[in-house]
Amino acid sequence: MKIVVQSEVFDLGAEVEAMRRGRTDIGAIASFVGLARDHNAGSGVQAMTLEHYPGMTEKALAALVEEAKSRWTLLDVTLIHRVGRLLPGDPIVLVAVAGQHRGEAFAACEFIMDYLKTRAPFWKKEETPEGERWVDARASDDAAAARWNLP
Amino acid sequence: MKIVVQSEVFDLGAEVEAMRRGRTDIGAIASFVGLARDHNAGSGVQAMTLEHYPGMTEKALAALVEEAKSRWTLLDVTLIHRVGRLLPGDPIVLVAVAGQHRGEAFAACEFIMDYLKTRAPFWKKEETPEGERWVDARASDDAAAARWNLP
Amino acid sequence: MKLRVLYFARLRERFGVAEEALDFSGATAADLVAQLRSRGDVWAEELAAGKAFRVAVNQSLVALDATLPEHAEVAIFPPVTGG
Amino acid sequence: MKLRVLYFARLRERFGVAEEALDFSGATAADLVAQLRSRGDVWAEELAAGKAFRVAVNQSLVALDATLPEHAEVAIFPPVTGG
Image (cartoon, rainbow over all chains, first blue to last red; front, side, top):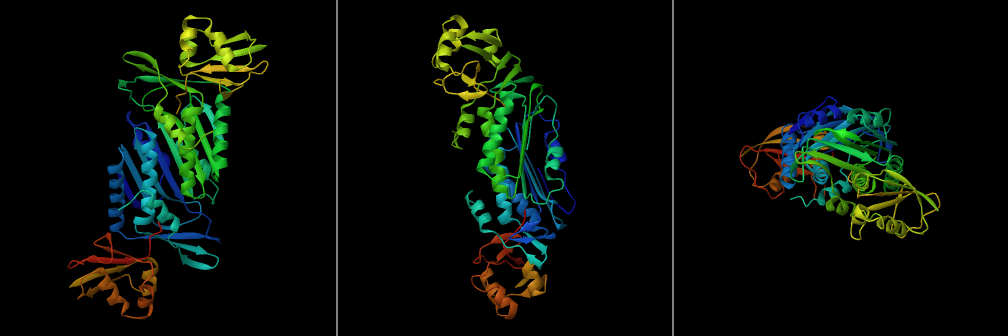
C-alpha cells in the first residue's frame, strides 16, 4: 500500500510499474487519474489551489483504503493526492488498484474515488475571470458515495 | 481513438500521457491493464499464447469502442490488445478512457473490458506442468457482459 | 455457392485445418454446421448439439439461423477468451 | 475544558482565523457550534442552522451530537471537494 499527499506531479506509468514489477499473481490493475479542467460550473478556470487538513488527510485516506481492502480481495493499492496550486490539464489524484480479477479492481478503484470525494479533507479554490471562488460540494458526489452504503 | 492489436509490450504511462497532452478539457481518465497470471483454474501457468482472428479482431474492437461512445460522452479511448506468446506478469490488454467526469470514464472502461471478454475473437492457450490447454470461456465473463444489456 | 471457411484455436487444432474453400448448397449457418458435422469423427464431436462454438459471417458474430451470402467468409471457433 | 479549534478553506477565510485555543464549558460538537455562533457576524452566518459544514474531532468526522473529549482537536470546515 502506498498513500501519499504531495505537491509534486506523479507518474502513472511508474506507479503501476512499481505495483506489478516482480509479481506474477496480479491479473488486473484498474487505475484512475483526475485532472484539473479549464472550466467548471459554466466559468473558465485559469488555475486552482488545493488546500487540505494535514494529519486528518492521511488518516482519512488510510481509512478509505482499509475500507476498500475489507470489501474486496486486493493485492495492492496506490493513492496519491496533490495539494497546492495546479493549472488546467494538471493531474490531481491517482488511484491504482491491483487484484486477481478485474471486477474487484474496478469496483475498489471507483469506491476509493467516490469515498475520497466526500470524506477526505481537501478543498478546491478556483481562479476564474470573475475572481477566486471556493468550489461547492456536488450533490452527484454524495449520490455516488451513497451507492456503496457507506456508514 | 486508438485501437491496436500488437505483439509488442505497451506503455500505460505513455498512452495516458498521449491522451491528455495539450488538452485541458479532460477531468477523468480511467484505465485498465490485464496481466498474465502464473496460475489459473488450479494449475501453474508457465506461459500463454494468444491467438486471434485478424480482420475480425479489429472490426470487433472498433465496434465495442463505438458502442461505448454511443452510451457515454467520451473524450478519447485507447485500446491495445497483445497477441503471441506471453509470460506470467506480462501485460495483455490496456483500455484507457478519457471523459469530463469520472462516472462515465469508469463505466465505459469496464464496459469495454466486459464486452471484449465475450465478443472479441481472442483465444488463450496455456502452458502448464500438465501440458498445453486452451482456456475455457468463463461463465462469470458472460454474466459481467450481461449486466450491460448487450444486444 | 462458394464459401471460405476458417477455424480458430481449439477447433483449428482438432480439425487439423485452418481454412478451406467449400461448395455449399444450404442456406443458413446451421446448414453449414450440419454439412460439416456429417463428416463424422472430430467434426461430429466438436459441432454436436450442445457444444459451445461461435459462428461469424464476414467477420461479424451471427446466430445459427443467419443466411449465408455468396462468397461469404465464415469462421467457426470456440467461445472467446481474450483480455 | 480546553480545546484546539481549526478552520479550513472558505470558513478559515471568512472567520479570518486558521486556529484558536478555546475554553469550552459545553459537552457536544453542537454546543461548541452554538458557542461560536453566539459571536455573531460571520460566525452566526456561516454556522447558521441549515448551512452545510462538517465537524471533525481528533481528525475523524463526527456528527453534531458527538461528545468532545478534553484537549480535543476540533476542526470545522465546508463539505470537502477533493479529487
